[in-house]
Length: 64
Image (cartoon, rainbow, N blue to C red; front, side, top):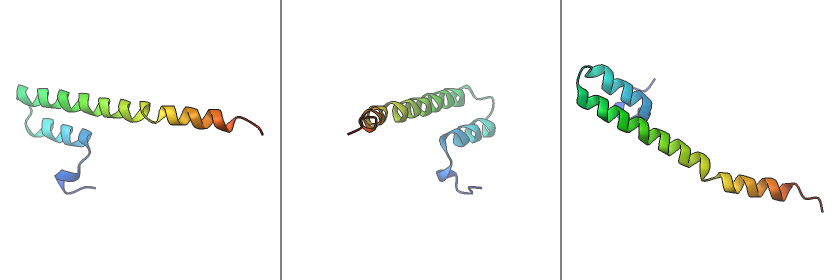
């Protein structure tokens, strides 16, 4: 759906990188680095707002 490679998601970009230059060990290192960065970003996005969700759940449970 995206024709501009600059707008590819990280996972699609990694797949494209590996499929275009298969057999080159340097690309596997870059792909592993990209996978690690994407996992770290997802974990950070999950853990950071969690404290706000907990405060909202706790404050919403009190009846006045």
